[in-house]
Length: 329
Ligand code: BEZ
Image (cartoon, rainbow, N blue to C red; front, side, top):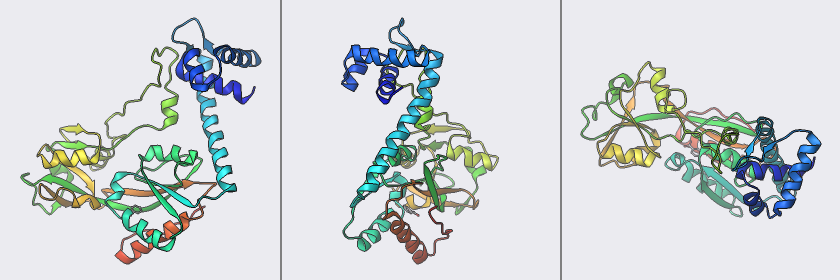
């Protein structure tokens, strides 16, 4: 079994067609077919059912695809990390979710740049889950997000918990109530905006042997109190909002609040947005917070990331923000 055979199999499995896989890999169709046959013969297993169009994986092929695609992603990550170790970059590539941009990120970057004038800083707006793959592929060196990740390649540092505020239209009957309770908000339409996309490994495993589409199946997020962060917070206080709407991002959610369509919860740093139409109020519940994490690879930390963490702690100290100092493993 060799890498060429495995890559041929992955391309055929993903595209469900020899001709499409040939186009993508630049390997001729007969060669691709030969590589797959060699692999199957060596393993003594039929991986692809060739009698169906589009091509389909057998049950064994599906299992093999799942395991091998994860392995090839890891191999790619190892290659990138090794290359980076041999030639440390003069740039620091930072991934971030939009909500941290309204908080302290600009100040963190300003301090870091002042202290490291010879390092080029590149910022990339990228979801929490995508940050994990981007760290492994070397697209980013560090990521700031709001979801915890369990991944053997990744270490996460919990920076702090930011309190959620309620965002209400100015004309809402509760708009001027200073200390809000979740129970009192249950009858207002709650606008949900978190991207609860499942990790890539789950998406990959959803390729079905009976699936006739040529692309990966998307796993649609389910808006319930387990996968949806805002519903989860309400559920922790025994509250189920009567009506909810789901939108694509936080900006749209605040636009709908401004238009009087409902209410939402946002991290406190967002309270500078649309202040003419939106009233932001505190919640009495101290534990209704949104965490901010720094993510980096476990085995390869860009040499400037510790400086970045120091800049963050410097700001927390200066502003009197509560946090617990952590160190890289
Ligand atoms: C913060 O708001 O605490 C924060 C945001 C982005 C990067 C680091 C810290």
